[in-house]
Amino acid sequence: MNQAEVTKLVSQLRIKVNSRLRKFRNPKGPEERLNKLRKTVTALIKHERIELNYPRADEARMYAERLISDAIRYGDCHKTTMEMADYWLVEKQLIHKLFKVLAPRYENYTVAYTRMLPAPRSYPGYLKAVLELKGNPYPSLLPDTHTNRNLIHNVLLDEAKKAYRMQKYKEIANKVEDRVRAEAQAAGAQSSQPVDVKSNTENAEVSESSQKELNKEVEVKDK
Amino acid sequence: MNSLRKQLNCITSKSYIKTITYRCLATVTEEITRQNDIFVAEQQRQKEEVGRIEKIEVQYEGVPANETLVMNKFLSTPYDCAKHLGDKIRDKSVVALLNGETLWHMHRPLPDSCRLELLHYNIPNPAAVNKTFWRSCSFLLGAVISDAFKDNVNVQLHSFPSPNVKSGSFVYDVQLSLDDWKPTESELKVLSIEMIKFCQKEFHLECLDVSKDIALEIFQNNPHKTQQIPDIAEHNGDKVTLYKAGTHIDISKGPMVPNTRHLGRITVANAIKLDTDIPGGPIYRFQGVALPAAITLNHFAYSILEERARILNSARIPGSQGVDNEDNSFISRIAQ
Image (tube, rainbow over all chains, first blue to last red):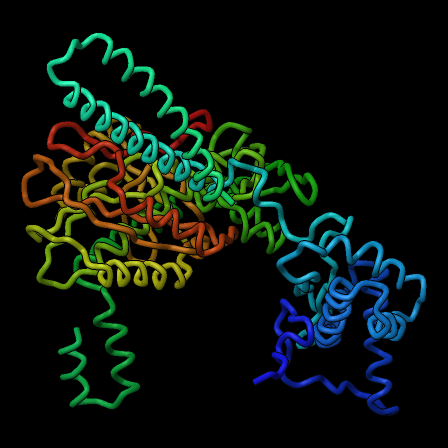
């Protein structure tokens, strides 16, 4: 039972890994296939956004993801990782970029480091794709539907948020009311004035703290 | 319908059944045919009435470039102008804005030379577009409801209130001959699917101004609409504006989206019995939520919208006193 867990030996990628690798058309054999992919991975690390044929993009993405995740996992003092970087990056100055720029950038990511989007086809049947590193300095390829709060889905979401908040406030108000009522009953026949003042101040404290709680809750929900 | 299909199954081969069921059973009742005949005849008459064709100049403002188009008076629509500007613009425009102030349905002929802007969902302030979309959703919901129930349920469309996106749901108030109906999950799902199917047929939403008499003739079997029509006509220069999608015809002030394919995600969220004094049976408020196909939303966020749409919409509840259709005039100012 003292076996290492196989799944933890290599870093788990956050993209779908194809069960079968593509061969591509290579008169010079499998080595040439890797040379092609090296070129693509190098270009991706260098330019951070490239447009190319879909199969090559899909294939190169897996190698790029693995390279970056290894760089994050082992750092630049690990011999095997350095050798891999040396192999996959044709232009050697990019090795510095990998360990000093990309690894810190992606350290805390919980999602994939690359993004692949379908691009317009040049000819029917020939799929194209854009492959990019996340967090690149270029303007986004996807339309921005978030900042404009007047768009229909944002209007609906904002109103839903408002309604949710109102409902929560109401619940809290009810709770406080119940508590005050219970206290008043407990006080019973005792002189009513001091009790009233006390309950009022308590009431204010409770509502403040509950509002904080609520704000936290709502924020969490927003995220 | 199923039993009829079974009977037909005994007699004929499968492919033949398909055509027959499609032709005979697919919703086209006598009443609908009658309404459509009147509508189409009137549309034809209005087209022929134009007579000698005059030219107008339409100055288009917007992407890709400002242009001047020479179009036909009383014949060309903003949709025709959009066709000249390219497929992309034709497909994404929702509603036209004439001279910077009047919202104009895409399939409504232009009466005069004008400045033309085409609005879509992704502009900086799309309040008017959203309203248009919401109104179309109500209208299409009516189309689906009038068709979805079995023959033993009497369905009379009543009206829908002025569209309010902030309320979280679009609404259609319908009179059903069901006493205390609470829709189950699966019933609502079926309604949603029916609406999606209807929208996938990609019907154009046609628009027509008709006189009071013709409107009364079209809606002679609907007591509520018959009651509403005189008042609507009074506020609209003795005209009633009708909209048609597929075979469904309804009254609305407009404007609407040009095609049913504009609707992307659709959910019919709830049907709630209303407390009203309208004679003839209980009124149910059907509610739903939808998003344009151009706007994608993740399923979690959409489920929040769905949840909210289940709560009773606070729009005015129709009563026997006063007309509560939203249609007072066709032209809706952008300042609304």
